[in-house]
Length: 397
Image (cartoon, rainbow, N blue to C red; front, side, top):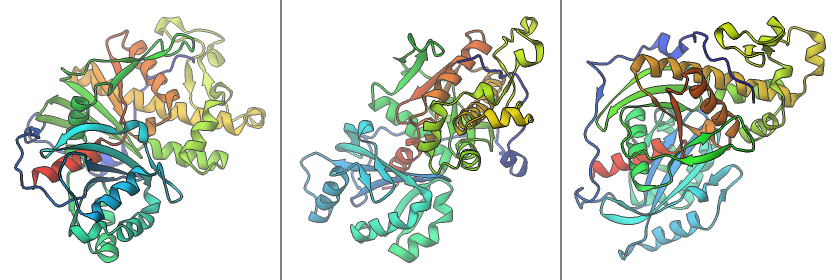
């Protein structure tokens, strides 16, 4: 894997230009994260869900009580349905390997199940809610993400549920804090990320995390600086994220899904598409520590008809993935330097089954900072918003 050029100045996100994020003082003040053993015993009716409706994916967290308390037969049927399968309809998936057992939520002990499906399949999800009579025991569903606003009317019309909306960034931070405390293997980094033989995942002790930077890679990217359990701010973002990668791959290769795009990228060669330093200088440019196989211009060789004809769809997918990842890494590095933060935590569904990008980010953070910055990753990737939403629902009970 070649070194990645991350020194170029990144353009501001379109979203940042149109709707600048404003803060009072150093950051946004948050209520202290509650101790769940001390929350009021008045619980909202079962079932307990947290839903994060993103631009590309809907992430659902379901709490299954496993203590001695008795639930209605309807809830037992729902638990059987959730646990009895790993795939739902045509496109929904339960990530069985991420299941969290023996956790305490609102004085109840149980398991957290993690389910995802494309946002384009929202009508299928609403049909599932209706068929399983989830709406019959409650009049409100708690949700976060942009889709909580976009699909509010659909929830009311289709299943007679009102959406109680929680802030997306608050939910993200609360979710990260809760999962890290309750899942010992949550945080890790990649050692020797460019050496295929020596590279491996290494657990990282994140028990004393502050301050740290959160790079949330979904359809777009938001970057948050977290100073303490109760204080954070959004420092920047970019519109070039996972949605950009998938959209461009669909245009360039004809693929249809994120999984297919990643599969193509895994066997592609981006150096056939990108212009490298050695293509310009004939070798290394060591004055600025730029080796010959550093990317100088993403897709820079595609002006040549001969190069275009020699490139495969796999090469194009790989180059697209490297381009998007480089841009994210560049912005993350600058944000970390501006905030004086050395721990950078990358999360979001863009990283699901995407070891290419994780290793690129791991190498780039360390290489271009000369070891000052460390890229960290979390096992539950894109589910923190839905976990935080579930916790917020408990606080409101």
